[in-house]
Length: 84
Image (cartoon, rainbow, N blue to C red; front, top):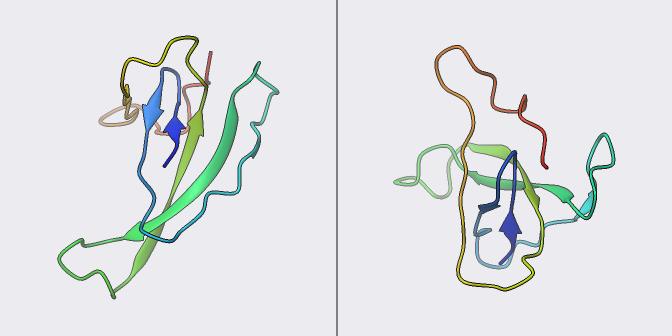
């Protein structure tokens, strides 16, 4: 659906039928656009509780596929890295 980026390039497929409303990213970084994707908290229960995942994308000069970068983990906040 969209190529997504967060401190690297990230692609996140939205749920079927869901559209990402792309907007300028905080900090106004180049041609990077940000949005949110709502996904099931537990993919075994698609009708259950949902969570929102913040995503960003930057178009490639030459598309060769999709690059995904998932920040966060022990000692690092997910939203901390800024797109470059």
